[in-house]
Image (cartoon, rainbow, N blue to C red):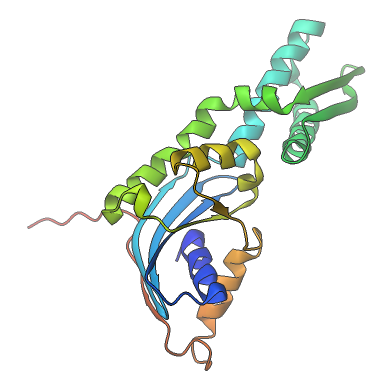
Amino acid sequence: MNESTTTAIAYGLVNKISAERNVLAFDLGGSNVNITVLKIEEDDFKATSIASSIHLGGDDFVNRMVEYFVRDFKRKYNKDLQDSKRGLRQLRNACEFAKLTLSSSCQASIEIDSLHEDIDFYWTITRECCEELNADLFRSTIEPIEKALRDAKIDKASVHEIVLVGGSTRIPKVQQILQDFFNGKQLNRSMELDEAVAYGAAVLSGDKSEEVKDLLLMDVVPHSLASKI
């Protein structure tokens, strides 16, 4: 069972949903994005569609920043950071930290002593610059959502809740794109982003307990199956 499904289950159990609701769980992690559309009514959980992309995640956003600074370093110093594994590793770690900082601040500093050939590298990157570097990637987060909605045979207006999970959903631009796509619908961040998946999985593993003994889950296959007749 994928992480977005367990997240949606956790949301349904925590909020004790009684009326039928269509819940879309959006999980954007380091290396992929997973979408689950779940129909929830009391203890019945039916996953109506799952979509994913293994080529989109927080690591890709960091890669864009690394590429940007490698180009900038070469332009300034006529030195190629690609020649230094150590320098690239240091730069990547700094960009990862900058990405996290930019989720809550408008700018972040890159400060690396002796990055390459005794050259110190100090730079400031703004949130706006990061958004420009990743504009196409941020927009592409909508594609698996559209596929999930098509497979579930519902339109976006029929989605009652959008539940976010995964560290990269903290990125303000990602949240803005999602909210714009769903015509201003409020995004639900009530679940602890990094704990929601573990919570849902823990609940399912305790299926003999009184609290969840009546829970009915119907999952779907995340990929198309082909059969030869």
